[in-house]
Amino acid sequence: MTNIAALKDKRPMGKGEPPAREAAPQNIKVAPREKKETNKPLQVQVPESVFEAFSQEAGQAFGFSHGAKSKLFLQMWEAYAATKR
View 1: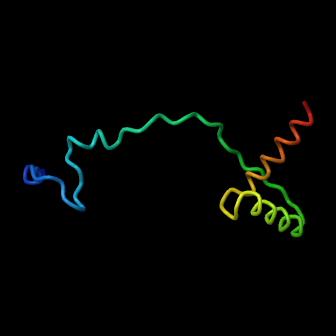
View 2 (view 1 turned 180 degrees about the horizontal axis):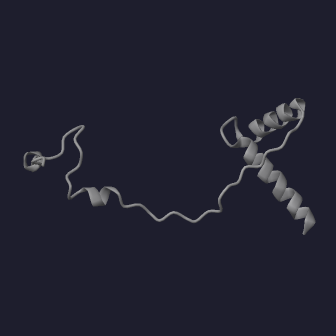
View 3 (view 1 turned 90 degrees about the vertical axis):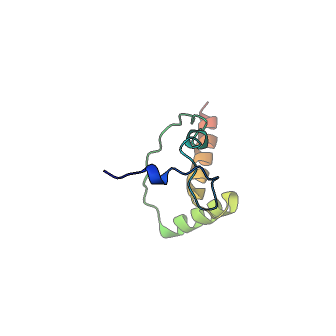
């Protein structure tokens, strides 16, 4: 069995050293996460020209980043659902 007694040091934590064992519980306290609805993939086949136009519109509306097309689709769905009410 490994002797960890030599690892116990009372020096203050320096740069690049892990926190003391006693300090760790304060480092991991986080607020509880909200329960969100899980995502499911929705795959459709569209002509390439429609895909490119949709991608361009999503990028302009939500920025050219990951998730822009999903955000645009959800915005379109909410607008559609509002007309059904």
